[in-house]
Image 1 (cartoon, rainbow, N blue to C red):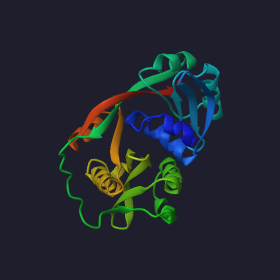
Image 2: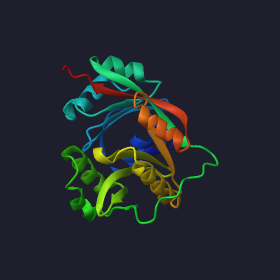
Image 3: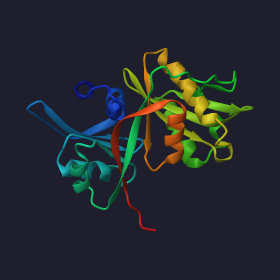
Image 4: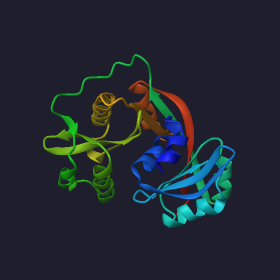
Length: 237
């Protein structure tokens, strides 16, 4: 897995894939190497997401989603999105913009004592969160840094960092009753400063249909640098 990670540049479009490979959090399916080109699918065993690199056999893509129980997301690049679409008829595809923090951006100050890094042993503090969010954060605490904004002793907003050598990918969520109050922005700023001490810059990925996420990225000084495509199984109502 480390060898495959080394074949991919440390750029925003590969940050999730390289994190899976570097951490050994995935299995690799359909590996093909020919004339310097590599194709494969990575499948995150816990999050049930998959990433398609190059143009592996459609059977490998179908195998990955079948092992994931036809749940989760499948990520493609502009170069292979058509290939993945042919392998996944009936799946909805949505474009997502990848951002990097702009040059000379002045990050806002974080109120002292309001935001901090959570310890893996603090999963007990998540009992108030909805089940899906609690489950995701509990898994994240085992594998990634997690920053939380607190109201009193209660964590209400969260930023999870997926890391490579020089980048980290932003995942944020806030409890319903605490949104639009700046908690998520404070979490991102705190994590950015924490990661910069370790030589990593933030990547903000947002579905283009997620207008609040796109607006928050722009407000914090992130600029678009690339694009990927996210496949999800279209469910009938």
